[in-house]
Length: 453
DNA sequence: AAGGACCTCAACCGCGCGTGG
DNA sequence: CCCACGCGCGGTTGAGGTCCT
Image (cartoon, rainbow, N blue to C red):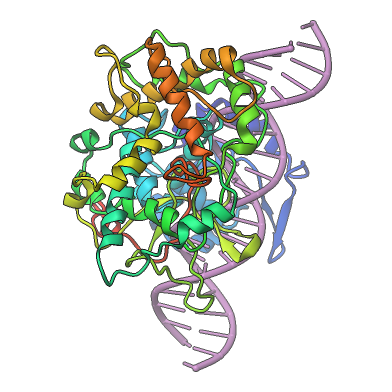
C-alpha cells in the first residue's frame, strides 16, 4: 500500500526533509519519545502498513509503542485512514462523485465522515478538501453550490409547512427580520436536482430529506444571517474552466466561463450580495430548531464560513444540510405552487424565469451539472450586459441569451430584489447562496449508508 | 525571469463522544 | 456517577506547486 503514496511527488519530496528530526516539523514529546510530525515517509508508511496487517486496525496508541514508529496514535490512524488502507480511491473525483458530494453536502452539511461513507474509497479528508476548494470556488465566482431545484423545492415544501397548521417554525417573522436586516438580494440560481435522482446510488434515500425544509428555515427562520457571496477579490479564477469541464455534455459551450471582468462585476456587487441563511434556535437552552422537526439542518449554499464557531450574536453557523425527517421523496418533487409562492419563485428564479429561446436548454430540465453550466454561462453573459448598462448597482443580468428582451426582463426582476415592494422585499432575494440553518441530529442517510453496519 | 497571489492537499489540533473501570 | 482513555470528526494550518502580472 505504501507504494500508492510513494509515487506521490509530494511525499517523495518530503522524504528527504522529514528524515531530519530536527527540522521545522519538530515533534512532540510523549513518554520520553520524540514523536515526529509532518509528512510521512515511505519507510514510516511501510512500518505502519506492516503493523496493521499483523495486528489490525484500532488501538492506535499501541502502534507507536509496538511498531517503533515515532508517531502518535492519531497520526497513525489518520495516515492509515487517508492513505494506506486498502481500497482507497486515488485521483480526482469522478463527475458522479462530485455530484454526489454536492448533494450529500446539501443534505448533511459538513459531515464529512458521513459523506465519505457514501463514497466508497474516499476519505472524509478528501471530501472536505474537495468541498473547501473546488466547490467553494463556485461561490466565489458567483455560482451556486446547490442546484436551484433543491432550493426551490425547499421553498415549496416550507410553504406547505407554513400552510399546515400546528407545525412550528412556520413563523412569518422571517420577512420582517430579513427586511430589518437590510438584506438585499443575492444572485443565485439553482437548478434541477430531480433529474439527478436516477444517477444517485441511493437517490431516494437521499431525497427523503428536504432541501425545502432547509431553505425555508432560511426564509422563515427567526434568526437569519446574511453573508456576502464573495469575500475577497479574486485576482484570478481558474475554476470556471475546470468547472465547466465538469459537464461532459455541456449544453452551451459558446459562452466563455467567467473572466476577470466577470469577477469584477461580482466583486463590485459583493457588498450587496447577501443571502438569507441560518436558522437559529432562539432557545439558548434547548439549542434545538423550532422549525418543523428539522434536527439536522444546515443552510443551503453556504460555503465560506466555519460551521463550528459561533458567530456574533451567538449564532452558530453551519454548512447546509437539507435534512428533514418528516419529508419524503414525494415531497421533494415539486408540488403545485401556490400562487403567491409562484411569484416568489419567479423572483428567486428570475434568471431562469426569463423567457428562454427554444434552443437554450433550461436548467430545470437538465441535470445538476448542466444546470450549473447553464448558470455559469448565464453569468458569463451577464458580464456583457454589465458592460452595457451597468453601473455599480447590484443589478445582475443573468441571461445573455440572445434575446435582448429577455435581458431586460431579467434586469428588471433583479431590480425587484431590492425593491421593498417586491415579494421578497428588501431582503430575501435570492436563494440562499450562503444559508445555514442549524442542525441537530443525524440524518436518514446515516441509517442507510451503503455498507454501513 | 522574478515575485507575488492563489490553489491544493496532507497533516495537525482541539473537541466531543463512547466505553470501561 | 465520575473519571480516564481511546477514538473519530471537523476545522485549520502550512508547505509546495501553479498561475498571473
